Image (cartoon, rainbow, N blue to C red; front, side):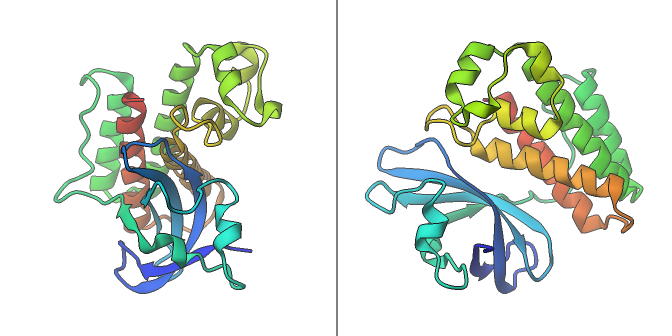
Length: 236
């Protein structure tokens, strides 16, 4: 069953069905409320969105089974989204200009290439480069990861690894899940970063393996996800 909500899409602004593609409780950031991170795809414009759902501490229990528990027969979970929802939105103007790391860093060089590709309508190249940026960032984090500590945070013990060499040999999807495990205990998990990285990875895979050219809207989305991932991962 595909879980969904009926709400105005922040991209096309139509009241439509948003299909949930990612869901995980976020660490408690507020004293009197909790936060859950989600990602969804609009059934109307087909673009992806992500955001946070803030709910009171005495509200419904938020875990991996929440959607199933609160869905109706069609998979509609709109009842959960009656509280405060904050969608990740693009800024005004050339929001895709990026200046998080020092100008000469390798990451910034790739992001400058992405900016050039955006300006010249090379939209498939945007997706491929953004995926590369995510992979480089994850690999840099792996270089300094403490395997014992990281293994202790991951609930699915089948995802544990015995060494850095084993982790480095895994596919990118596994590495993202290992560095940002969405099932970890609250306070130690960052499912918001996990969703951003996985969506960027999927966009890159789509560009590499599908015949349909990327649109300007596709490129804007993957660029926005990558920027937010870099800013969030940098502060993690």
